Length: 260
Image 1 (cartoon, helix red, strand yellow):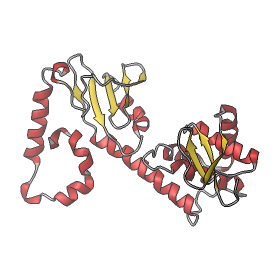
Image 2 (cartoon, helix red, strand yellow):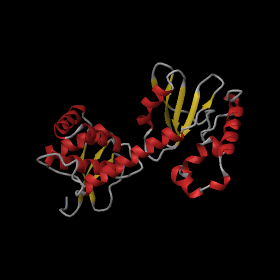
Image 3 (cartoon, helix red, strand yellow):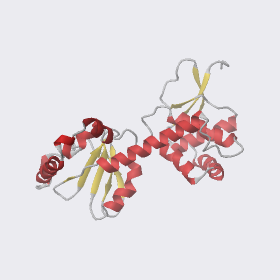
Image 4 (spheres, helix red, strand yellow):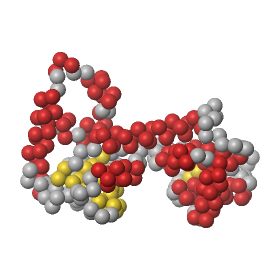
């Protein structure tokens, strides 16, 4: 391989796979500049130097080492930032951060003069912000069999971060929360939360709106009442569209009953 060419590791794009990349990097004494999926073509002047086989034992050893150097909050920021799947190079960012953490004599988690430490903090803040918006803007629709359905399209893969909240908040109700962008969701059956996926012919709607054939008889009435209430409490003279868009970004509106 040319000395000027970038090297890359190919892996399965899982978090354990990423930690295995770190382990293999130190084992082989080679740090890749790029991390690619198995089926992802290497960019120009970049060669795949190593194909990583995800190994839970290797991943656990890397994580155990990080636990000795990092606070619980900093470790949490790694797993949360991993969910920023709309950022294409987030895995490379986390990889560099972990390697710097391992190489440093002490924790670098507050060294915001380092570009990767600062960037990771920004990504963590973005993901946490998206989680909060999901808690704020999710709207449920009731089906005829008593299940509450809600659809959302978060910018990042934050659905797993919201499950504990919804399970505690709606412990006495069956519900399904579905990520339309990533085509998966979770169902709570009053006991357990299980992952679900829908086929193309499902009646939950590709746009997140329930098919009327499975909607509870009173659901449309309740939606109408909610829209009427929303309009009645609005003070026309104090309308501030710019502030509204700032607090409630337009990309969420299509899933909000009151904005239909």
